[in-house]
Amino acid sequence: MAAIEKLMDKLVGLCKRRGFIFPSSEIYGGLNSCYDYGPLGVELKRNIKDYWWKAMVQTRDDIEGLDASILMHPRVWEASGHIANFTDPMVDCKECKARFRADQIEGAMCGSPGYKGRKANKCADEGKFTEARLFNLMFKTFMGPVEEAANVVYMRPETAQGIYVNVYNVMQASRQRIPFGIAQIGKAFRNEITPGNFTFRTREFEQMEMQFFVKPGTDMEWFEYWKAQRIAWYDGLGVRKAKLQFHQHGPTELAHYAAAAFDIEYEFPFGWKELEGIHNRTDFDLKRHAEYSGKDLSYFDDATREKYIPYIVETSAGCDRTVLTTLIDAYDEDVIEGEARTVLHLAPVIAPIKAGVFPLVKKEGMPEVAKKIYQDLKKHFPVFYDDGGAIGRRYRRMDEAGTPYGITIDGQTLQDQTVTVRERDSLVQTRVASDKLLPFIQEKMAGYRRVD
Ligand code: GAP
Image (cartoon, rainbow, N blue to C red):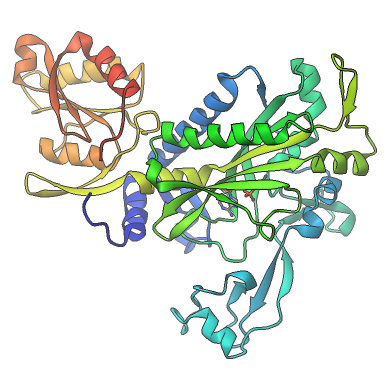
């Protein structure tokens, strides 16, 4: 792999240029930490969500899907502990007015005009910071036209609570028995003090969460099961194994609800960071919701005649963080026939476009044959037709978009109805009969393994 310098800057540039990710409201100067997914980005994100949904819901008999609302009864957040505990300590610099998380001063840089690049711990040492104040990360808004305390509602900071309050609705409707799970993909909002690193930490993001309800005493067994399942999922997504690790939460890191927690971490250019959390939440959530709602949330097992509050094992992944991880992990630069190329080694299952279709020249009937191949393949997966410029440049454009296969229609095609299939990673070119093209590409996609 070529030496990759300033990877994040290059990636941000590529995301904008190729239409993966744009800054939000850019014509107004942008909105801090908010991003929009462009044509390629929205496909990549959708493919990742579909891949998760397939693994977590559609191929399993013991997990059901849910799509709960973002706004929930305010008591939910009292019961969950978010009103009391979902806080970060915040300090302000009295000199430049910058704001920092008190527990993340080390390594932080000032971004205020006139102070850019100044180390935050220098200001801390010089006594420029205020006392730390606790800041609740939930976004507040009002339900209805009157902005008064009685009408306060919160934008959910995690999707999990929508699952807990629906557990018996889902269980009864789908005739599930414990152990079983509920999965959900949706937006969450956190008024982060220090968002950053592109889409790694934002104030609006999507989560892919699954809550697995189990009998007390079996929770640690399920916890280990889900750890293994979840790390294997990233391998299927094409993320390199050597870049993933588990991090066990020590007693001071554990969230207020967790008895055990492991993060799946990825080695980002800015260090090993959390990609997904796997938590043993015990009976904390259902006990609290029973207490605050006054409803009995215990489960009765007909077979054993036992009654208990189920324990919960949670797998909580960030969708935007997974998109960022796949882009970083896929990014590469190499030199082909003396010419530099930027390539995204995205696995075909998540690549926004699966194949580019190129007539070698815009004459001799090649565009007509290429258009027909393009229309036929488009019924099966996203393909891109490109007849503009030298063939090498067309390949490069698709390499940068992460398109795994390039199909070229040339003079020989007109003679014997074969086309050339070029593989993005190995650059191997194979001649394939056009009527065998679809199964050829489908087989390649199914058997894809990244080669470094
Ligand atoms: N229900 C448990 C829960 O929300 P979490 O560790 O706070 O746990 C789970 O969040 C995942 O959500 C994280 O691993 C991360 O991928 C994603 N996430 C959390 N905060 C985020 C933020 N500000 N921006 C982007 N993704 C975030």
